[in-house]
Image 1 (cartoon, rainbow, N blue to C red):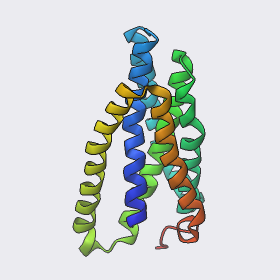
Image 2: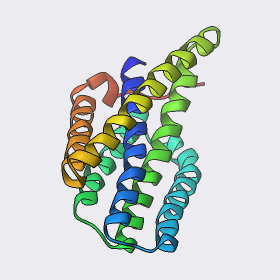
Image 3: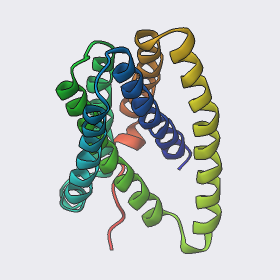
Image 4: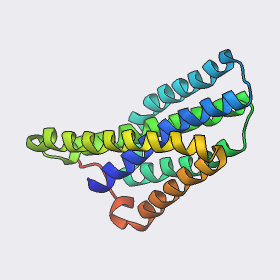
Length: 184
């Protein structure tokens, strides 16, 4: 569960970073506010699509496999933020990351609820929230400072490095790769 909490917290931070990066790119490229709204809306469409796809995927894909695939989508799409400046492509990247994140979040939460005994659900959930909100609070501040002082490309590289590390950890951890939902 510790590994899942840390991976989940970092990925939630990357979603926050994704929104901040898109806003920064929109401002630097002088993209009209209406197009910015459409870019962000594409993320909502990606979230909805991920929510719809999660139940059938849970029936056919192991937890570890789904988590690995979601991380690979993050790793492949994330660096594109450093180079893509057109609204249509920004929307596509934002939607793809949102879709992958929705599937990842549903799989991780479902796994947590399935493996943690009922008597410990409250304690585990509170620990998860402390970790998550601590990472989001400190991380969002660090992201803002990084964007302000270093710019888009170095910030993308920093966040991408973290994605590479947690993806590498997942693929090196046999236990995480082979994790499945409990039967019954």
